[in-house]
Image (cartoon, rainbow, N blue to C red; front, side):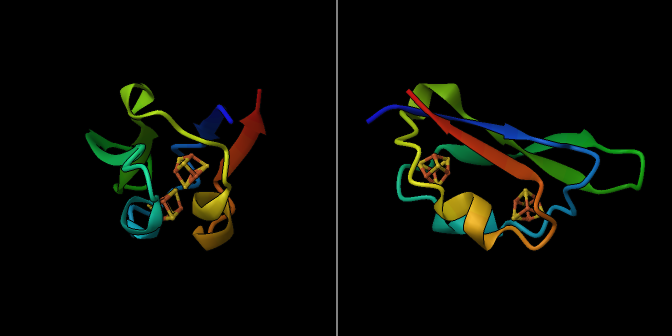
Length: 69
Ligand code: SF4
Ligand code: SF4
């Protein structure tokens, strides 16, 4: 299954839980900083997200939306 995630960079606090738990390493912490001063997570489109939604379940800020194709 193919999936896609959208991360709201302004909600993200850069905790890294999504990065740690994604089985496909399809989320990375960017080097950019949001308005609250946190580095935020971004999808890595090259890594083949499956849409499993583990990242969204782990995110304490509910910053990740998952869709499946
Ligand atoms: S939906 Fe699954 S595969 Fe896709 S980024 Fe999130 S944890 Fe990784
Ligand atoms: S789990 Fe949520 S708050 Fe933590 S880095 Fe990922 S998107 Fe940001």
